[in-house]
Image 1 (tube, rainbow, N blue to C red):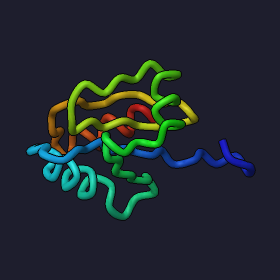
Image 2: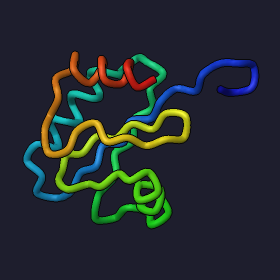
Image 3: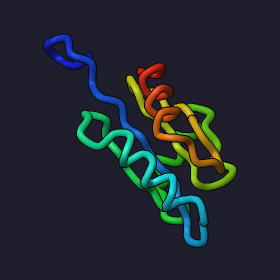
Length: 100
């Protein structure tokens, strides 16, 4: 909760890397799913990930085995939603709504 009692919007992290054939499709899906909403979207290159963020993933026991990987951050907690697959627009919207 933010001051004033309003929930903070979740953040979706899309992890990609060079040569990932499904990453452009995953990026298009999350952009379509959350365009015009208050959900924040961030794309992170797996090979250039900030060490502090990598530590946060370990703290939350989130392990990225393949790309694209989609992680949600809500209320300071990180959770892996997808790894190596591309969800549908409807599927990712439902998952984010259920996690919020």
